[in-house]
Length: 597
Image (cartoon, rainbow, N blue to C red):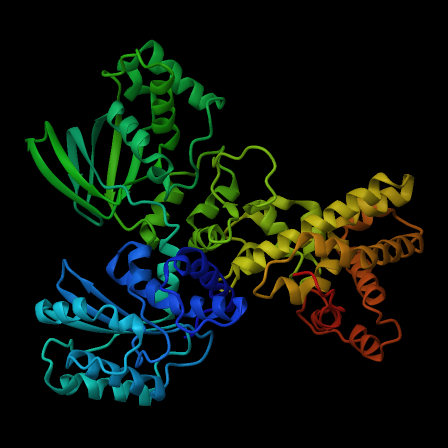
């Protein structure tokens, strides 16, 4: 399966910024634009080496030999720790498969290199000839890597590579038996790993501990609160990566109570606190004394309940360095489970069903949210989906998940969304609800999310300006029809929103000004034609909002008199909650506002 277009765009940006500056210079440079495009292509070999061998990006870039007369060899790298010589061909293509022609060229280059024939190679390879000969003399393995982002390796290309390896390139026994296929899945995984939160591995001592072996391995006992505070100091928010929320700050009643107990009577802490629960991928018991105490080596340790306890303690210690909390202990449960698996998510959800937990907090259990966060970080956009993440001041490159939900909902075809959002935004934040599932599918592009938010912010700015500039009923019309207006207007940016380029806010404002003014006037004309019951009542009534939205889309999209609309309005299908075909048709006819990227 080929890489998704928006991920391909993010990958190219990442390659340009991380690897291109350290590549060997092009042997036959052309124009600045051509050279940049060529270097981005060349740098994909460095990206593959970086994520296969876990090496420094600069070192990976220096291994690139891709240029004219490379005989299909794009990078050559010797991994000293494993005594493996890597020979890489990399094809940065959005859709095309790795072809037979490319495989045959690569095979020729490999045969020449392993047999010590450097005749005809370009200057990049020749400059490394002595070191390559040295590595060939001392390596234990030779690994052939095909890195690609397209549809895969063509069957004839696979045959050419298997023939090379079966023949051992003419007798080179150190060649591994199979190609290392660095495909689009591995590429996206590498891209995501760049912005992954660090894994927490640690050692904790449990006193008076017990254990369970079925259905899951678990250990429980008491732990020194200071030990958990030390982990917070060392790892910060990584300690709570699998929790539904991070620290909520000093000012919550619970956190104030925690710090008061630590200050006044730390010995009573374990009796006044609900305890801490953590998931671990591995739990290894170490030295101890019966059930009195034991040390545990913990891999991928993540606090899924008790973040407020641990973080509040850490902040209390930081604010009161002379305080003695050595007597403070807390009950802890360690469960061996993959936090991303179904069981881990069920435990996290079940142990966080306190009354004060907001529905949106459970978005932290949605793997798609973390995928989006990592991809957007490559674009220097901060995506916040976890409750408790510190957010201060206005940052146009910061997006909160609640805002993303509203923006993406406006792109959906279902015309009931505007009235539902007018009634209750919280219903869209329920992660087990249909609107949320529809919006945050696995196919959701992270760039689409950003573009939708930028368009939605623009629409809200315009509506707010309309409200400020009007009086009485006209003011109410814009205020209470905001979601209906946003739903109709957002669809005019559909092509730009769903593309692989980010919308330029300045260009959007310039291009959208006149169409918005037309939209505003259409809405007011429609509202004036309805003598009763008024803008607010219309906005909260589903049937009236559907009628308003239909009329608004028809006028805004220039469809008055379209015969297809008359036929679709007369069409009713039993069981449908609204006229699906009608609104699908209207949305498909939205004239697109261009030149905004």
